[in-house]
Structures are given as C-alpha cells and as structure tokens.
Length: 206
Image 1 (tube, rainbow, N blue to C red):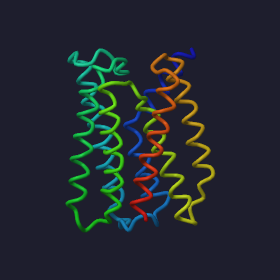
Image 2: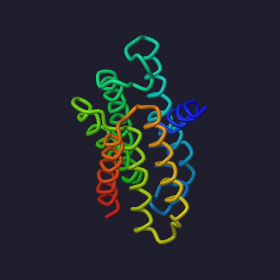
Image 3: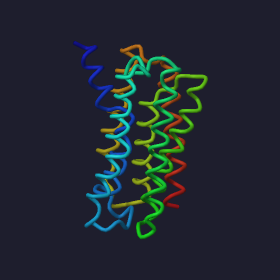
C-alpha cells in the first residue's frame, strides 16, 4: 500500500509539472509579477503546459514503449540522459518561441530560461551522478515562492511556502522509500535546484 502511494506521488508530482506550477504562480497567483494581458494568459498557459508537460511526457512514454528506457522511473544513469536531453530541447525551443514574441513581457521567456538552464545543469551531472530531478524541480519551486514573497508585498506566501515544503517532504520521502535515490542525491538535488533558480529569479526581477 505504501509503495503504491509512493509511486503515485512520484508520477503525479514529477519534475515536468514544475514549469506549469511556476507559471501558475506568475499568471494567476502573483499577477503583478508580469505585465502579461489577462486576455492572453489562458492561451499562453495552455501553450506552456503543452510544450513543457504534455508533449515531453508523451515523448518519454514513447521512449518506454520503444524500449529506449526500461522504466519511466529511469533508474540508471544511461536511461536518464536521452529523455533529459530531449526535455532540454523542448524547453529551449519553447523559450526561444516566447522570446521571439517581443510584444510579451520578457519575464515570460526569462522564467523558462532559468528552468531550462537548471535542467541542462542536471543533465550534465547525469553523465557522472544520479542527482534527484524531483528534488531539483521542487527546489526551484521553493525558490520562486521565496523570491516572490520578498519582492511582491501583496503576495501572501505563507501557505504556498508551507504547501511546497510539505510537498517536498512527501516527494523526497517517496523517492527514498522506492529506493530511487540515496539521501545525498535527494539533498543535493534540492539545494542545487533552489540555489540555481533563486539566483535566476532574483536576476529576472532585479
């Protein structure tokens, strides 16, 4: 029963979900963080969810069905490199597309650039070490909540921060329970994701 719960948590709160959560904060929770017109937010949000969550997820499932990866959990270093690289390409192309739409606030593409660069760093580490992608993503989510809480006084961040911390604990514990990572891989992933995204988001809204 506990193993099934841990598996569900790992799948539902996968790293690909993080950009959708980040842009949910930017568009709907802290709208003063960008100048994106309300009338286009829903369409832009759908585009971001499509290109950073749905399409990469379908691609990874395709890798599993074709035998490129043996498991969606990508337990070995060799299994992680190709999917991670493809995700970097999808994110990079989406960042480029958003950047070319010069009528939009640069925050739109710069936020995804921070995430993309963080994933590129994670992918490079994957050559030699299995750092937790789940924790890297959640570290980035914590970072943007902290940055926004310090820069936008109208953002009441307490419950969002507590929720993100609780989610981080549950996901981290689930990954450990599934023997998907060692504790150090969990901790380093969390710290790396937080620092990389904290510095990036501070620069964006400086």
